[in-house]
Length: 326
Image (cartoon, rainbow, N blue to C red; front, top):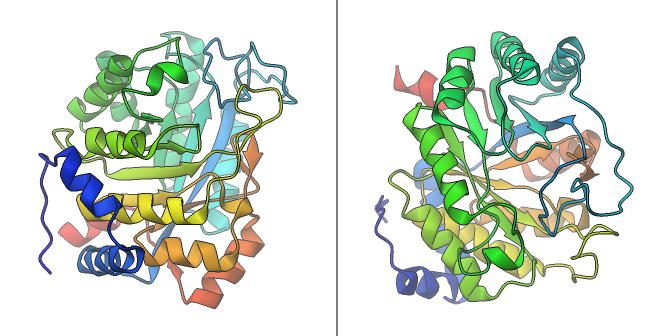
């Protein structure tokens, strides 16, 4: 089977892939995955909330929105040395990418942004891939982050363009796409995916994959999140996403974006080892390590190490594409 890279997928094509018989879908995704990656490797990333809560946005799934009454405690931006200590601990535990998240609507040109730039420089000097997720970003801000050594920028689409307004009203879908454009124009790797379990339809899931796969260049990283319902948010009563839905999303993403890292992200705490193994088999090759994903639970490092040992998985090295290019 020859890998095809195309940026003109139709919704009908993606729908046919998504709805194909599950075992056939998993087999095709696994085959394409092994044509492009070492099937025994998974990238281990750590995500740290460097500024928590108090966000002015109204994302219906997010416990960090100031307007919702959740258990999240608001914390101002952490000091640079504290973040760099956390990054070193993550590296010592086996993470090769360190991502810093701030609960901002957009980046502002102020002392806090200067601090983040120093965090990026420090993590980059450790030899880790450094990623940020800070909200909307201008072209000039993306340039400054790139100059500081930023490797990747995360900005999820969350869901389809059609369903987006049901989840968020404080920014538009075009706002999100503009940030991705600013990131790409400054030669920073794009990390963009979404969340399933928001009450969306299957067509909405296909619509989100359609948008991602038809960007001028596919994202280098595509996080697939299962909603973690949080008490106090509008989506607190949403049922758990069936693992089969996660498998279909991961496998379809792998087939239509064969060179992307597909990140099995939020929702892993609810998955058994067998369910996670199916996701890896279907093309997922990246996870977040550590006990929290920003503010929601995540499996501990010991559990992940035991799972890797069980499945014969080894952590992927930092900057692997760049090293192999030489």
